[in-house]
Length: 216
Length: 260
Image (cartoon, rainbow over all chains, first blue to last red):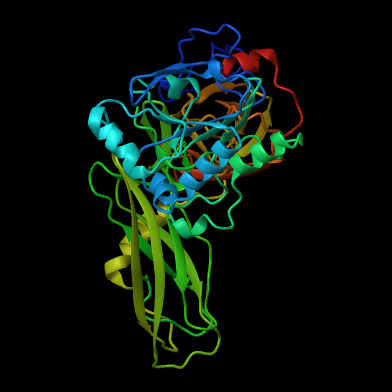
């Protein structure tokens, strides 16, 4: 649509133009009425229930009392490979696990899209990746991803024991696919967890994530 | 490639990296939007040479469900100005090398790397234009943002919206269509949200939902405004560069609502 200038006093209502609204941005709330519908730092993290590779269900609110890290994942994404082929993600998962942090890896790839795995292929993948995450959750319909507005792989979220979203955004401050960039980078997940556990204020609570697009 | 067929001591030349984007794929702008990563060029130049910033052609908006990015689906060129030292041996050949990294995505994403190079003779006279490339350079320059030709841009924001007030130059008597703002800062606006263009008494207003980041409003808004039909002047440029402070005039309720 064209937008004409208003001329004189015969102003008509404003005509609007713009590209279509994103159809995927309206999450449907369910479950926990305490939880927010969308993810916003400082507010309750949206609750969700999702199924892991073994078919067990995991509900975020059942992890109250523990820190939770959400990691969006797509095995074929170069940014994910940067962190897995170098072993850095597995190390981070291990270090978090040692501190009692629950680490949920989430794949929101739709069926047939890149990064989608099921059944035995999924079990093999998790083994091959040597993942130290608490669980790998399959979010094929993208419900969890949309609720958190997860845009990239990786896209990281840190949730407090009280269920508040503490951090949302990139894994670190060096947007690249080069594993050599990991050493010396500021890891925002580590920073957020360290600060929160020490009772300090988290310096960076929100960044723009970088990575491949989530394959909804 | 270079536009000039030779190089003069102390005189900058413009070179370009051409991206031949395969059908169905895209490569990203400097701010890739929700996902992706723009290309980078790491120069390996002879002693005394320096390289300027990448000059980015304006991108297009690329939307997939839940994710909106900015990039190029067709061939594009990244222009860079290289400045040689004053002392260069006439008659010698210099070689300019660069390491180019990029991410290309269709449904999947693939990281690419190429080592590119260019050899040019050093000559004392004004270099001739390489006709083979002159046209391509001209096309590439037409896609670079220019200073607003008589347009005035003011910016305001609240926790939910960024509003750009666009005042045209005197005599502007055309309609605008499909105007889109592309910020350099990837964390300012909600990339997937509809950008709403409306008419005001003295121009136009573009209202854009802010990113849900919880961050303070930054001091300035920097980026480009793209109007596919141009800005009503003779330059035919589609993109103008915006670099203005956010003014501390609150948005009225009506303005906020209109931006929904």
